[in-house]
Amino acid sequence: MKRSFLRIAAVTAASILFGLSFVSCNDDDKNDDFESKIFTVELPTDGDMPGYGPSYHYEWRWTNRTEAAADSISFDIVDSGTLTTNDSVKIPTTLYTPYKELWTFRTKETGERELKFNYMKVSYGLNPDGKDYVSAKVLRDTVIKF
Image 1 (spheres, helix red, strand yellow):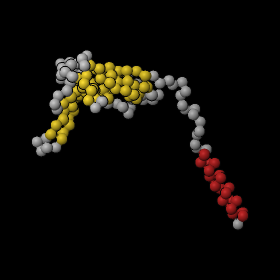
Image 2 (tube, one colour):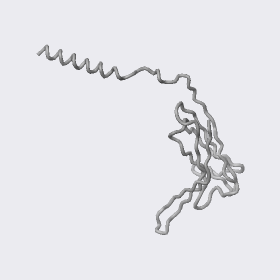
Image 3 (cartoon, one colour):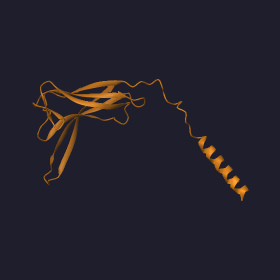
Image 4 (cartoon, rainbow, N blue to C red):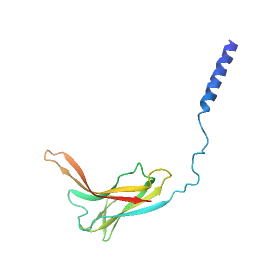
């Protein structure tokens, strides 16, 4: 009985050691030389188009979030005139007022070294059957390399 217990313990220990040989606790593949940087991107809107309307608005959408070597850390809207703040959302007070979206990013070690944005007209409202709809039309693309 004692001999079979020792044999089981030895086999169990050997199995654990074999399994641990495949686990690396070493950070050799980590790049200690990488230093994250912060940068800001200005994306202007068109001054000749209304920025907001009763059933639409224009906005920039970041399209390669998962692939980019950057994380967005802040977003702001800067207007040449005044802004109205409503529930922490900034809205230009006048239609046809050009404004800029300011996106701030922190670089990551891996990923694409470019940011891709689409400038979109987003429309929303009710269908004749009373159901909500949202549609977006891409007006132009922008690629920013960093």
